[in-house]
Amino acid sequence: MPSRDTEPKTPWGLVLALWGAGLGAAAQYGKFSAIFDQLPAVYPEAGAALGLIVSVVGLLGIFLGVAAGVMVARIRYRRALLWALWIGAALSLFQALLPPLPWMLASRALEGLSHLAIVVATPTLIAQICAPKDRGLALTLWGTFFGVAFTVLAWAGLPLVAWQGIPALLAAHGLYMAAFALLLAHRLKALEIDTDAPALSLGKVLRDHVEIYSSPYISAPAIGWLFYTFCFVSILTVLPAYIAPEVRAFVMGAMPLVSIASSMTLGVFLLRFVPAINVILIGFAGSVLAMIALWLAPGAPAACLALAATMGLIQGASFAAVPQLNRTADTQARANGALAQTGNIGNTLGTPIMAITAGSLGYAGLPILAGLAFLLGGAAHLVLARKRQQA
Image (tube, rainbow, N blue to C red; front, side):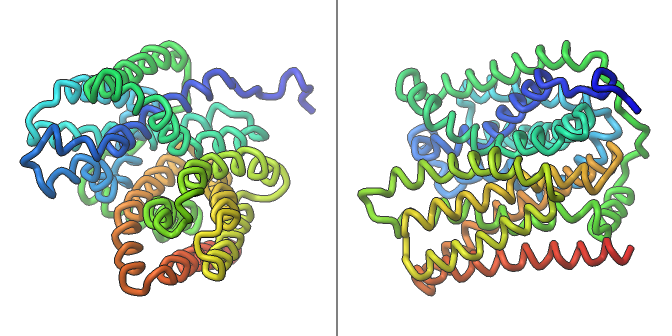
């Protein structure tokens, strides 16, 4: 029996460095979302095409999420992550020049590839370097990267723009990505976790889609993630109009923070005693109850914060479920690629569908649609769990 001294130890410094790289990936989305209202002054003739500056990154993820899992496994995780960071740094510095709109859109499309490689390679690396007992905590931490990055952009990025302009924010992001590329090039140098991966082809990618989404192990985190992401951004976008003006700013600023706090405290505690899928189911059930409360008391601050807390459980546990259900680096990369794909589908479809529903049915459309999505997410996990038992 191994002693405490011989048990594998988690390199928490490296985990934090990888999480820091994830913050840079989230900022690839958030940097233009945060300044979207200022972009018409930069591109006054863009019109509706201006929205592509934000969305083209996510649109690529819809089509290339699974392919990214295969590509990252073939390129090797360390190499893929470092190249993605360097490419992301170069593109952000190029964007700081505020090039003509076609060139800006082209750079954003390439940035989508960089983003995909980071969000597939990094959680796979984290799962591989952690001691089994620490994976839940480490991957729950990873699951906060979007919320933390958007908060940092709001608190530090917007003041920087107000002080030095949009180019300063884009240049700062480029330098941040370069700094983590240098740091991780050193820290990951001796890491040997890569396995052989088959050659990439269109037929291979199509077969992988079938294999991933027919597997109740590889697909489960991604299927639940689809319903979570369908709700998360859309609720934060549509809900504010129904919250009392005097508390609106506080509630909307607190919701992402409450979600992160719930994930890192209650979520981590639960993951030490129950499987990640069960934590996700608790999160979905709690979110359904919170939507019922919001249906009965429209815009109630307590119900909004309770919703954020229950969604935080889904957020962290979904990433923790990947290594619990998939033991090899290859299947974990595929599962993370599927997470990227369904996450982009949910983010892309959620807001317009939620806005149309609320416009047609009034406020009641929001809790009905979101509550139904949470219910379907929980039901999907129960069906997949049943399939795993049968297998």
